[in-house]
Image (cartoon, rainbow, N blue to C red; front, side, top):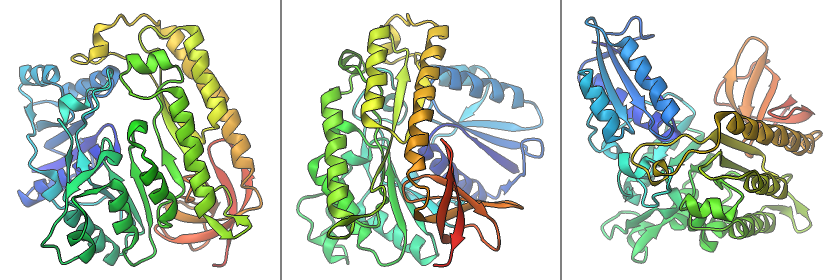
Length: 423
């Protein structure tokens, strides 16, 4: 059959889709260019937000007909499985994705899952009910996969997990790697980062997603010391109000989060120096997730979130309007913030973020940065700095996957412009 995969949601789902593609090809199926030319469509779902699930289900129902087979996969709640079963739509029951070689979308960047599932049970989140409890992948497998990727020319490694900083795997006493065999007891996330950072080669290392309650001092030091880890951290805060954080079951306070950011900045400033008296430019960029309109969130509590945004000076915020997910604890609460007010609060965050992001990006003007080229069109090459800033430069002879130096000449809120400089 000719197959086409539609992927919703996070990077973990994108990584899963790469593994689904491999399995389909092993079964003899061939890729199609689009849904119209496919007679087998796999829809990789995300159950994080109710509205997103409804859109995905609507698309599944529209695509479903006698001429093609539809299969649903990914994060699917039991209630959604029942809806799919009622429409005679099969659900993909995945094998261990960790053991499946992915059919990678990119030739220069690779997702590497290190754990799956979550034990946190945030009151708004469906992940523990769709992916189950936390399960960490053996460090030996992770290191072996990354070695192979680097040998094949991959320039960027992105470690994946619902909560990467709770990674914890047993040591392998039979490993050919002395570092793995001699590890004391368990290999935790800081130790895993050190092992990967020690691999030979010129590559970028990053990870998503972290939970503030598991951001230990050892992890902060490892991030700053391991020079292949890019100076960018995505650390979801979700709200700037302690009462809302408790209702979300997040297990930290606003003060704790702010202190973490202070520690992280301090550690990077200490370890990322060109010389004793000169810091690397912009040693760290921070992004976060925020939910607006959580049940019971008052105008005053939302103002606390705006205050936190001003205090932290985030480089980027991924914000969402709350929508209840059946089966979660928050779904039992009254969704008493109107859709209109949720939109207003989202717009307020966007307005503040745009102003702050522009001021942060202006600091890059005149600076020289390294860019990993991700896209090339007729006129421009676009790529990311190590601080995850998008930069566009005149194309010339640049190719996707190249790392080039550029001097920044202009800044906007969401991107930078520059000119290539010889390396």
